[in-house]
Length: 59
Image (cartoon, helix red, strand yellow):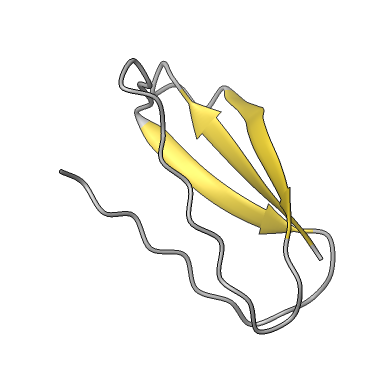
C-alpha cells in the first residue's frame, strides 16, 4: 500500500506531496524529518481503503 505525506508550509491550504512510502500490511515505518523541515499542517493519504494510524513525535 502506498502512504503519501502531504504538507502545507504556508498554512493557507496549499498542500503539496512531500514523500511517498510503500508499506506492507501490518508493518511499521519510521521516518525522521530533516532538521530544517517546516510545515504548518501535515496530512497522510493512502492509495487504497484501509484502517491505519499515523503518529508524530515532536522533540
